[in-house]
Structure formats: C-alpha cells, structure tokens
Length: 211
Image 1: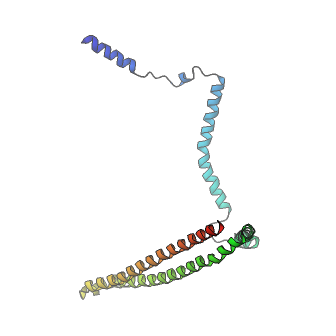
Image 2: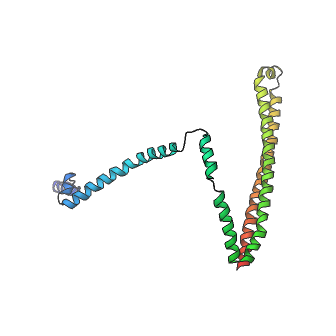
Image 3: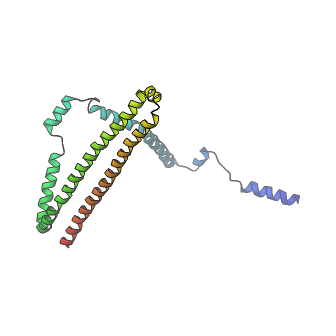
C-alpha cells in the first residue's frame, strides 16, 4: 500500500505543469524577435493612449465650432454660404426624375400618379394627430388643475369631507384622457398601417408594370 501511495504522489508531481519565468520565454529569441516584441509593445501603448487623446481632440474640435450659445455671426455666415441640404435634395429629385423618365417613362408616370396617395394619407394623419394632441393637452391641464386646487386648499377639502368627491372628479378627468389616448393610438396605428399599405402598393404596382 505504501508503494502504491508513493507512486501516486510521484505521478501527481509529474502531472503538475512546470512554469517558467518571464525572461526565460525569450531564451531562444534572436534579435529580430526582440525587435518585434519592442515594436509591438510600443504600438500597444500608443493604441491605449490614443483613445483618451481622441476624446480631447474631439472636444477641441467641437469647441472650435463656436460657444455653447446662439452666435449671430455663425448664423449670418451660414445664411450667406447657404450651408444647407436644399441644393443637394433638389438636385437629387431632379436627377431622379430625369433618370426615371429616361429608363422607363411609362413606369415613371405610373409611380408619379400613385405618389400623391401617400402624401394625402400622411397629411390627413398629421391633422388627426395634431387635433388629438391638442385635446389631450387640454385634458391634462384640466386634470392637473383639479389636483392643484385640491392640494392648494387641502384644509377646505378636508373640512367639508370632500376627499371622495375630489378623487372622483380627478378620476373622471383621467378617464376622458385615457379614452382620448386610446382613440389616438387606434387612429395612429391605422394611419401608419394605411401608409405602409399604400407604400407597398406603389412598390407592387411598379414591379407589376415594370415586369
């Protein structure tokens, strides 16, 4: 038994991974290996330092555009030089129309005839959303006014035992707001669905006509 235990201990010692020191890793390294390691180390250090420096450089770049306030001089220069996307957008639209009519004038006419449908749908949806937003804002203000009045005159409300009445009034205002929100969500979802339906209908018609 003793011989077996001794053999097992020896096998465990042999199975242990022998480690070496760091400098012994370069025992068989030649001059080129050492040079490459030095260059790699310098590159790694530069890579680590570049990120903080990049943040500083980017901050200085942003500061060079002007102070964090409305600068009339910058606005004047921008207006004079016409730094905007209008020229690019207009040229893109004109070039797109010209290329479309050159490639297939029949298909271009079909798509141009269908595009107003998407514009009309977007306009109607925007009008509905604007109306519901104004109604919701008014309902929010009414509910907030009830709460502010109740908190501002809490002693009067408590003296007349009108807490339940005020809570029911506030709840009634919130119910109208909730119904308006549901109605707004339904119309918004239907409008977006119709927009995508018209958009893909234009795609389908153009593919069908061009095939």
